[in-house]
Amino acid sequence: MASTSRLAKVRARLDLPTVRRASGLLEGRHRSIYSGHGQDFDEMAEYHMGDDVSDIDWKASASYGEPVIRRFVRDSNLAMVVAVDTGRNMGATAPDGGSKAEIAQFAAEIVCYLARSRGDTVALVAGDSERIVQIPARGGTQHMEMLLRRIEAMFEIDAPASDLNRVLDRILTWFNRRSLVVLITDEARPQAEHELGLKRLRTRHEVMVVQVGDALPTTFGDTPIDDVDRHLEIPEYLRSHQALDSEARAAAERRRQDVAAMLRRQGVEGVTANSEDELIDRLIDLLRRQRRVRR
Image (cartoon, rainbow, N blue to C red; front, side, top):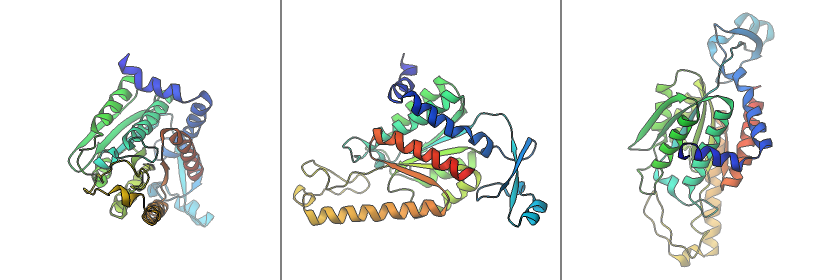
């Protein structure tokens, strides 16, 4: 049946121990995300960047010597937002020779599969410089399948240019309920121009970034290539040049370090995946790190 094909394919690729481990790592988020007033009191906890300042217990903070918050718990499903960069950069080639769009699509499929298996709700914000799609958070198989089809339809090599700030701004203006935002983009983003938007998003929501790796122009020396962001054809004899290859790798590493440093400044965890198989383990590691940070 077409309506269940995508999630069924994900289940076929994820073994049961992997699913249980990922679901278990999401479990604690019901306690960390839903903090505030009008709920059952759970515990006092140290204040961390991104927590609601209105939850600070100033009397207890004075006694403790550090800001602490009153944490509350309610029984509710986790609200998740899949935020997708659909710029034409996502239609380029990944390091494994496949399409970056395929890896990005698989990342969205894993998130939706885990959410459905836990009964959580998922919303979608996907866009670029000319298009923006937003779909409210709901649960269930049909809803997840519909989200995934919308994402797939927006991935194309002749899509408009990327505009990550439009995606971040839409989440900020649309979602009032504190949620887990999974941002799917490529390894060149977020850039410095996105840092303010990411900082604002981080104060309201929990954020994870999944970056899809880019193939270097020197990786496939005998294959015709073009730059998707700026038209630039590089002759084969240049791409096979050893010095150019070394320079390209060094530039890519500097770019990755700059992005990683920016994410650290904003307290955001991120992973880069170069293939679909690598993505599974990287996502598990990301969830584990995020849970450790939020404790």
